[in-house]
Image 1 (cartoon, rainbow, N blue to C red):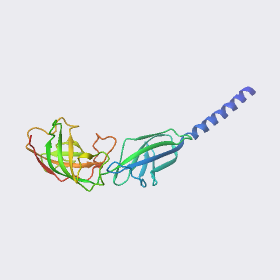
Image 2 (cartoon, rainbow, N blue to C red):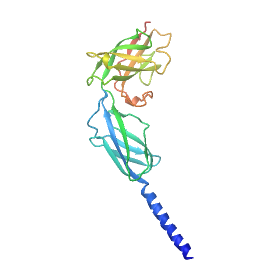
Image 3 (cartoon, one colour):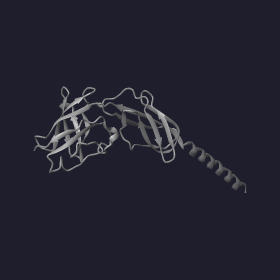
Image 4 (cartoon, rainbow, N blue to C red):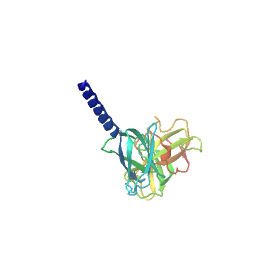
Length: 243
């Protein structure tokens, strides 16, 4: 009987300690860092004031970054959290990012990025089929309101319609565009319009089409059209199609 009592007491102590340790590891810190990049692809030093929200199915936590881009959440229950980073004029690099938090003494650390929504503007002067291979369109354009030259290139979305009311929400088809750094000179540039989505550059049977280009912030899932990443669109250009 004494042996059984001793065993029972020992078991209770073991379970209590085990439960205490388990409870202790159910929470922990989540620390992180936000990198910010301007429309040209260069790092921005002031990363203060980005709104950080961590969410799972039942919980939501909120905080702002400090000047250097750091944030810290204490006593966070273990689990997976979707992170949402917001600030006017910026877009989160990856809107599907998940923080996997196991709790415990060691903080969970993650780094994320945001990109500036472009301020520069373009206007299209003419469009031709690329002379060498004919695999893309070249839109000779003017570019204004820039902050110098991009690190590599600018990204754009280019929409086409048979009606002059062509917008990101009203179009026949669209293509991805880019302006390479080495094509920009004294406010002039060449916009490359590439067929990533459609099998054609433009459909048969049209003598003219209306075109509008939207500067686009860079982001991770670039094949996803995220219209909130768009800057000021160009004026509508009437393209007279010539082979």
